[in-house]
Length: 279
Image (cartoon, rainbow, N blue to C red):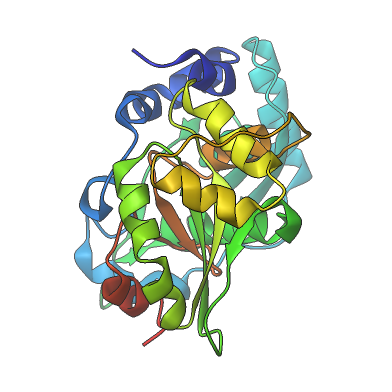
């Protein structure tokens, strides 16, 4: 059974309930390692990974498609706001960004919602046209998060790579990742934490961490299971949860590169450094 806080964020109307159905099942479990929870786009065609960058989304949103999709959603009693619909390499198919929902594909008429991976064939190797679009959406969304709203563990010495990690105080794999923070930072990786409480019980814990005068010290406490006390304050926990929902986060930790690619869940420090090019 999904928690009330998750349902509050993810089940506001019929469309969000439909699109988040599978997500809610995973969120009930929540904590995961890399193999269980990476949102990778090479699971269907392994050879597409090296070809992801060859397909780039257009920066120009098609106002007519946005208007048509918005009208069709409204006709079905769905009030999610459509932010943009950009053309893809697939004729007549557009990549849609919406408030409070993971991005998805639609057709030119705006009558169909398409979720999942789209593979282009016919070239020397298959090309995943979804991956560049997913990464571009995540890159822009993460770049927009103010640094003061994250808890940052800077690299030791020169910064070779920056990663964003959606995390939870009660997640075993999140704690395992945090145990290796000194090693991760020593490898030149800066870690920027965003809040992703997996249950209603975890929400006040994460809010207390973000409301603490010394957030890093509070996070260190929370990661070893200590109780963190702090006065209530305005905090970004709910905003981080909404952002995670938009990016399709399914569990914690969920680690993204600055380029918007999700490298998985928990990875040992050495493997993480290799995955993000910090070696």
